[in-house]
Image (cartoon, rainbow, N blue to C red; front, side):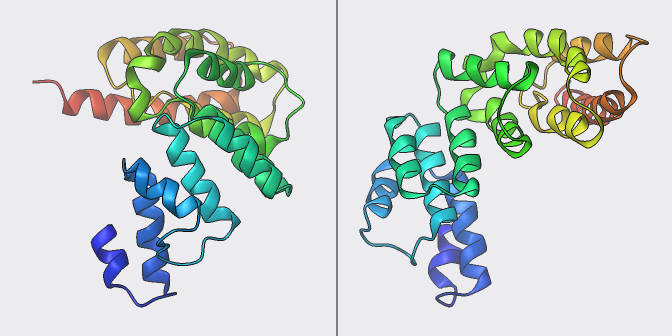
Length: 207
């Protein structure tokens, strides 16, 4: 991604796409911190790109105070959504449990903030940290139909599904959850699709 970004025409869509890919995957905290401070930027960082830098930094273990600092710069509704995602990306047990509570319990957050939190809950980088939460997710996801409906219900299921825990135990939990005949239809549809992807992943890794 960095090679493509450096070779692309400045300001082009190709450069922007490569930059976004780089920000989702790099582990170079020094470089990202420099960019956030305005040093050696590949291009001007708008609010969205700055939030991607912050999100990646906290995912990698940087001080979560970065989130509050960026929130003071960006007070827009989009900024609140980005901050919610970044908080869910913090690699601590407390942060992950707080994110899980937002996914599984009623909240005063907007739907978009809940979606963003769901996206940041289960990340590949935090596999070991979130492993203890998988069983709780399956135990509680069915009850979310009591306070969410339709699109919002299905979207939270899809975005927060623990895809990164692609193992037989997680698949068994998914199948057991689907066996509940009282599952809300919208929730069941998302869970069926997600479980199918999980099954493919588990099968591909089975000798």
